[in-house]
Image (tube, rainbow, N blue to C red; front, side):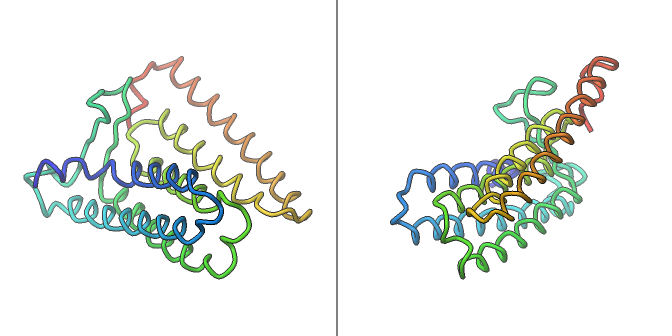
Length: 201
């Protein structure tokens, strides 16, 4: 049981990634199947988030010392690998985002999921980037997950052909591209001045 709990931090990232990829493979006619996969994926993410919240509350001291979990993806340690760090704040944020995502997903069934085949896939990729940003243990991978989140949000904002939607979406994209560029410059300057040491939070 302890072995499986140690791998819990990766679930909020890998589950939406797999679900989004599967949804993209399904044809437009399989609308109900795509919606079902999206809901099941989001429920699994919420369950995993609640598990992280339980572990971060120091309820299982034999799994995480002082309620802080560190998970190196592929057993590659930083600064070269992706290291996830789960504390109480990260667990709370992942739980809240999963709750809001599930509510938004169910609400979207009324109308918003009809135009465009990629809605549910983009929704899952957005959750992947959001959860990755909350759980990552270094600044560079925070930037990477942030870009995944933004790329998915671009697709969601630009869904539909209304002129006002496209105009507002282009403004959103331009502002975020400038912000991402400044973020990347800041990360590069930090790395150039101090090396990889400050990349870990």
